[in-house]
Image (cartoon, rainbow, N blue to C red; front, side, top):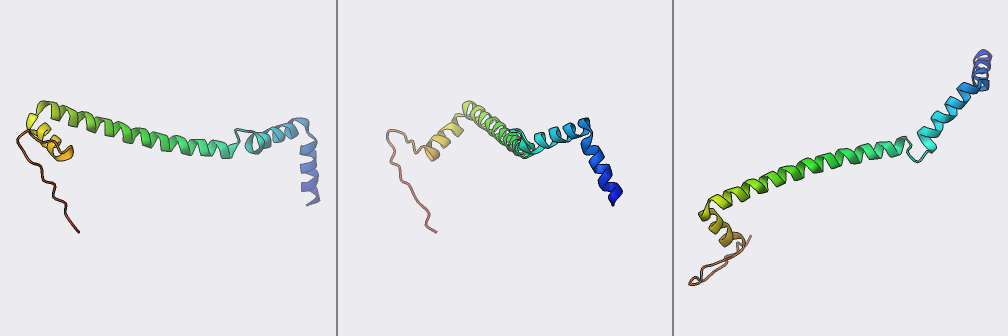
Length: 100
């Protein structure tokens, strides 16, 4: 045990080892960009990549829906009537709500 303590003290007296140890501890725990901050950034980066993928898929879905609506007038009229409650001049519109 005494040999181990002497060995550690000898290592700590070594300037290069002590400065390397200090530098490592400083970077790992004290610096503004410490390990915990880096872990949070990596986690946030993963979340942003997932969000980007989600929104790219949504954009593609909307573009496909837009292309379908531009090519099919019946589908466009159906969407306008159902979603935006549009009607023709000589029509009456009745909205039926389902009760649960």
